[in-house]
Image (tube, rainbow, N blue to C red; front, side, top):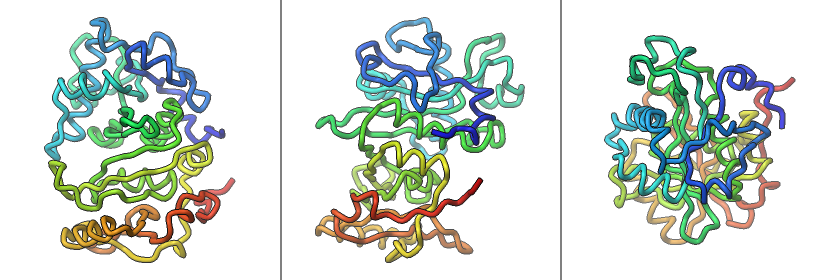
Length: 292
């Protein structure tokens, strides 16, 4: 897989993994050919990596705290690192600009790794899918502090590390993560309106992930507009409820690409079709956005 467009990231940042030994056994420690050094493996049940793990939680809090979705410590331990794993990229503290250290609240005198991206995934009960419930990069907390493409590479490498063929994710309709996930391929909408979540304007998505999907994501390919049958206004809660009713009634709907912003309106392109065609990756038309 060609990772040359990401040389700026790979030359300055290294992958890390937070996982218990039983979980580690099932993880690919060289996702996309990117080796995870043994010294960058952190056991959450050992105290040695405490400072690094605290910085992981701090980056998560800076990203999701403003939305009221900050992850309590017990959730991180019980729900993230007991059943699942935390993957991401990090850099040496000595290479982090002072202003970024202040944003991330890096302790004075700390000389270890500083996490700059986070991908948290846990297995779902039937073991066929993995729930991705955290995906972020330092650029969301300290804009411009790391190269673009960091969380795109984090998503691609994170899914490769897990080795699963399917992911499920919960994303808010206005979140830019929605467009990022759509780079993998069509996103089947499981819920369009989710009152069981703290933020009911959260959608639940399912997506097939394989090498072809990761290549599309890393190349930033875009879907052909002819695959779009309708749009959802990302600020129209009534439309979300109506779409939820259609899905509960058996309609198969997928997000066809990143949001389109026109003035004050954010529109999500939707593809409505039968399930067999949606799941056939060969039937989806993608356009190479960049050439050469």
